[in-house]
Amino acid sequence: MDSPDTQIAEFTLQERMRYLFGDHAILRYGWHNFHQIAPGVFRSNQPTHGRLAAYRAMGIENVITLRGTGDAIHHRMERASCAALGLTMHSIGANARKPVRQQELIRLLDLFRTMPRPFLMHCKSGADRAGLASALYLLDQEGAPIHEARRMLSFRYLHIQRSATGILDHILDRFEARQADGAIGIRDWIETEYSTDDIARSWAAGRRG
Image (cartoon, rainbow, N blue to C red; front, side):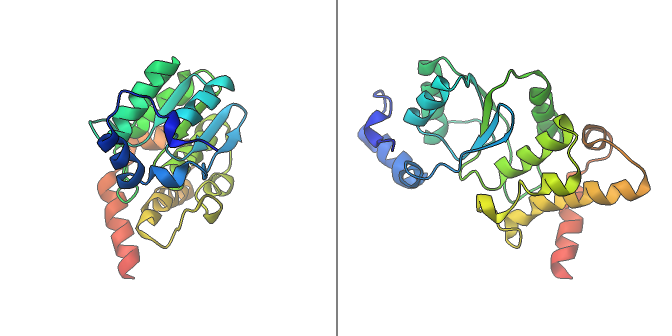
């Protein structure tokens, strides 16, 4: 089990407390939600410094955070940890309760094409945004059928479809519905037809119904 004492030393006690309790990192020392979804491709919740060191020992050199950029304590600590450990950190901005912006999805797919394996992708809990990213990886890189990709958004990873985070499942719903009009790859659909307005509108309509 990782320990709070393994966090890098440059942060003040106040910052560490904000990380541990404000960002709920205290829960993630014993619970990792760490899974391999394809050869050399892993998903998890927000990793601590000690966990990143362990992943580095596994050969992981690249980390995708789906929590965006900024000065939040979790982001600063991860950035410093990656720098200290020689890891490359890539940031994708995604919200678990809103449609992910088209440009962020394209950036994510670009990373999937170019990033050396093994690599890790994570969000805060490893349940929602990491689930969508994992589904997109399987669709885009593994040629998985939609029903298989959907398994990445399931209660196995603590994703709850009937909550507000079900809007991420709805992105896959809209992609699947599009197949009725003719086969299209996930990347082509995102690049040419994906619309956050459409996702938000149809999701809201379904919730009202």
